[in-house]
Amino acid sequence: MVKLEDFMARMKADHSPVEDVGRIAQDAGVKALVLSHLNPAIDSISDDTWRAPVAKYFKSEIIVGKDLMVV
Image (cartoon, rainbow, N blue to C red; front, side, top):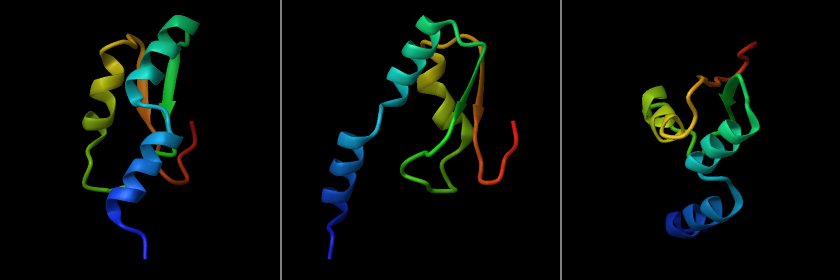
């Protein structure tokens, strides 16, 4: 059985922090950014919670992707 702490440590090691995503998108001149493959994928985490750390660095449109969403 996998411990939650081990799982979360692995997720942090294998995924980009949202702050980094915002910086990279801003530096690249991206017009709109879609956040997807979010971890942890918990429905109770609001879109604004995902957007806030990205918006510190990225000043254009930020879309929080949902399953089956078409952009």
